[in-house]
Amino acid sequence: MNYKMIIQMLGQVCLFEALFMILPLAVSIIYREPDGFAYLIVMVFCILFGFLSSRIKVRNKTIYGREGLVIVSLSWIILSIFGSLPFFMSGDIPHFPDALFETASGFTTTGSSILTDVEALSKTNLFWRSFTHWIGGMGVLVFILAFLPMKTGSAGMRIMRAESPGPSVSKLVPKVKTTAMILYSIYLSMTVIQIIVLLFAGTPLFDALILSFGSAGTGGFAIKNDGLASYTNLQQSIVTIAMILFGVNFNVYYLLLRKRASQAFKMTEVRVYLVIIAISILLITINVAPLFPSVYEAFHHTAFQVTSIITTTGFSTRDFNMWPPLSQTILVIIMFIGACAGSTGGGIKVSRIILLLKGVRKEILMTCHPRSVKKLKIDGHSVSHEVIRSINAFIIIYAVIFVISLLIISLDSMDLVTNFTAVAATLNNIGPGLNVVGPTGNFSSFSDLSKFVLMFDMLAGRLELMPMLILFVPSTWKK
Image (tube, rainbow, N blue to C red; front, top):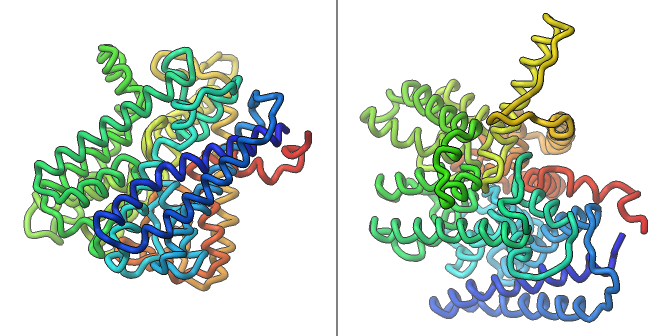
């Protein structure tokens, strides 16, 4: 284990976090809020740690697979700890575990909250709270790979895979650095476009920034107690379209930029993703139509909510706790499915679901025809045994974490639906669940122990499980 290189990389992460905090500091100056001092103090600590870590003499600067995974997991933990300090120091969230929960939820683009009155927060803290979505959406280490020259060996790709959810993340071009720059360029461009479109739709600048950060990172923190209910139908529709686009595999946009549209539109995962959205909207619209004054209103809010849940954004325009059981069941199902691999969305991912179903079909056919040779294919390419093995392992580990988390938080004596959807919402990085943790509720009722369990679920879900689990393997820390 290359400890010195790990410390240096963590120092770089802290330096970039200090850089990101310049924006909320600027917001505090614009709105003349004293909370900016808390960000200034944390920035000094981050810069100091980054400077001291850079003074460590490292002879071997190569990062291999094990170090890469440890760097990813520790980076996200440190980001959350330092990022929570302004909330705690400013007094907006005086209980540190709550401040840490809110920040971890932000960076992991989960959107689950402990706040009972969001509008009581200062503009500075509201901005930072949502900006963490944008930072975490594509991943801070992908950002570092794009702009910081370093020798990572094959671990550069492992870092990118850990931060870009899904089983099919690959290099768009031969160099990892160039791939990271392409991804961030697309991400930034799409965010800016959404901000501009929202401004033309009459959205205040501050709100446009917040909504775009949440849509781009598929995070879901709102700045109003009613979520997005008070925005116009046009503004809500813009967010709906944005959420769908950010839930698409970013390889599609790269192919479109390279004028390979036919190849982009043939991607099975994207087509299945859009079909799931369409079917879910149709079924729920029919089911909830009696609750709305018109079919259009039912369709509009259903489209928003389905898109918000499947992309794991978590915004809401209506309290779907009040919807019929069929609609709630469909929403819970798509909570687990999630968005496309290589997007900013969470969940199990559509590509994994496709391959799992293809695997089941293969086993059924093999049972009927034992001597036949069947290969799993997607988009015309054979899927390797290693990919199938990793997906099977992912599902097993996912189920084990889910069950253990559910058992632990059940000690708080909440009802089963609340507990089940709380774990589903955090492990899949969605945000709201049902009942107590529904779109009009929050996670403040849970004990500190449960909050730490749910924080682990957020980080594990965002980082595809393995980077967090590897921290608990003793052999990881051997030299």
